[in-house]
Image 1 (spheres, helix red, strand yellow):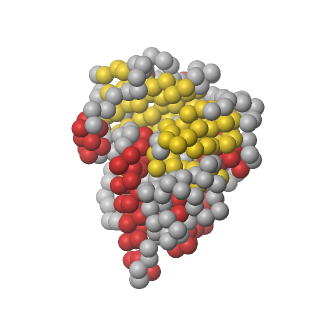
Image 2 (tube, one colour):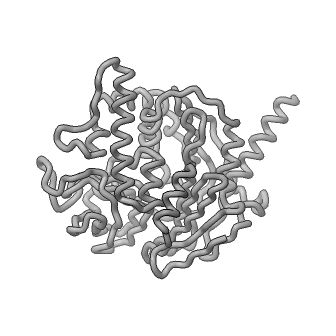
Image 3 (cartoon, rainbow, N blue to C red):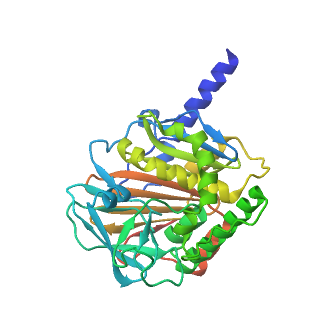
Length: 379
């Protein structure tokens, strides 16, 4: 009975930590700390699924934007409801929404083709029937600026992958640094090579002969896909028949790496396979390591308390439909990105990332500032 009571107490405590407050235009540091039990809305952690060095917790609960339909970028491209076009600018693409639905472009979404493979740095909502919407982007392929094989040099054919490591996500989303993105792409390719070669007991290079610097083509390497499928065979069941899931927490080698929470069940369901793929690829690149870390719930508490005594927070108006608040806490070494659907005045996506001192040092050295015309709040 005592053990059961302790377990229930712990689950209630974790649930309290997972309370998600609605975004507003005026960011409030105390919102998480003061959230009463009535703000829980039933959010809690599901049973974890684990394979080798990767552990996944689904986050379950009610979404506040369930009545709205969002197409993912992959869905929109596959169904010909969107066109992503080259502009001649390395760090900017353009999108036409040919549908009557909103398109949700996820931070880290990669698009294949064009003159170079790209990734989109931030979450962006594209309004129905909107044309020529600018998409700030980063190259995840170096040197190529021409047609590749049978691909369309002016458009992008698909978006099957997200950036597969938190270091890449931080380089594009927080540091906003193209050179650092290229550096991290090369680093990931080398880590895949080392881990796969160790496993196969022979040299395995994931770089493609067609374009050796392409991260997308590296992710399509047969040996890497085989290794990824080993994880998928053990973990894919976590995503099946779970209608209450709204997010995912990822632990690699027993360390909490990232949390994503969405206020729309259907959107999480449509993104979940892509999110799981990215988590698996990061686990492969990190390899299995002996590690002793604090309990999972303690790490969760630490990450979700990012707003307590945060060093900096600022809000960017991405477009008329999208507002993003970034919170940086150097002491806790955590970043939080809150994406607001401005038409609904509610948060759609919460993204928590574990980071390190180097992230903040690089940011300081680059003298980073919010985009012009946006409000910044520094504590």
